[in-house]
Length: 283
Image (cartoon, rainbow, N blue to C red):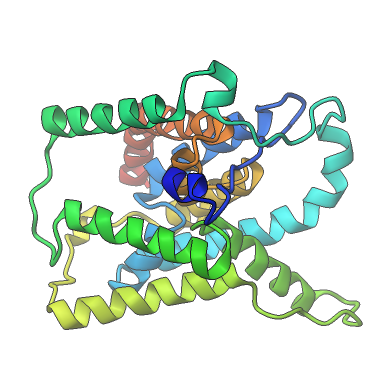
């Protein structure tokens, strides 16, 4: 992305901050909510679409919770913006290099080496799918490039829930004078993800059976999906919008959000998930 920008082929779409009483308030709170939601559902706003294509039943409840969160966010945002967002902290698309004055090649190189090092030390996966993690990452990178050149926007999934929620609100509202607009490109992307996952599963002949013992209750999936997507919209992105697209542009807001996501995810996985299991066993 940096190379194409230097060549003048595109401009990096740096994600802006999500002010919520403070410059990074929305990024922190939203990131924490996404992390909690991921830990109790075992999915993110993007992977849940793949899980639906794989026939994982709890994914449907997670997606439903996400849709309700998107509708809720669309409904409450106009009423809360004036109260929660401080005019002294407008959204700013700043990068790590602008904040630290460290050259961009150094930051990219440091990130790349760090990621490779962590994978070498903590590698725990075993390849059972039709594509290795390295190849999958390369495909995602190519998809990111295609999205930038074809749509002038990076990958991002959580927006689809908000846009779909807007359509839902327009369908159920008493005043139907305003018709729902055309499908947003994020909804088309989400639909294509489901279709693509189903197609690859069929072509590669993947085994889509999963351990039924790992399934979570409907209410947990629904609530977790709601928390996850509402947090993603509050923070201006999810693991794809901030994690894949935002960090690749060195967006400061995206790094803050990602730290919140995984920090809260790790903590809630250690504390909240065992508590939920105990509740389910009691019930």
